[in-house]
Length: 115
Ligand SMILES: [Zn+2]
Ligand SMILES: [Zn+2]
Image (tube, rainbow, N blue to C red; front, side, top):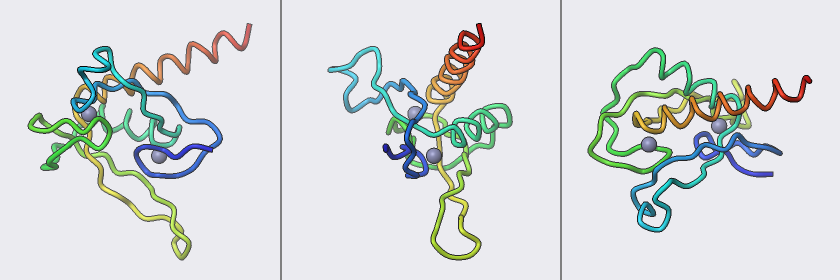
């Protein structure tokens, strides 16, 4: 099991998303991997299509600061009614692009699986 880097939910498999994290960009100039679950990937995709500016101070996925951010509302499970709550996250443009790549990669893999 691994925890989603966005909502924190543990899943057997997560979708790998390659982000350019400023804290480790010198060690990993091509980017580092984050893992998010399919639900969050889908939410990020929707948020990318329908961008709502966020006044967040940093990106919740790569940690970059001082760039434009956009709101991402993820569902975080809780142990009492109504069993989930909405959490406001913020993503930067480059992480949105990374999510789109992850979705595309997943679809390609699925298409290959059907042959
Ligand atoms: Zn998640
Ligand atoms: Zn980011």
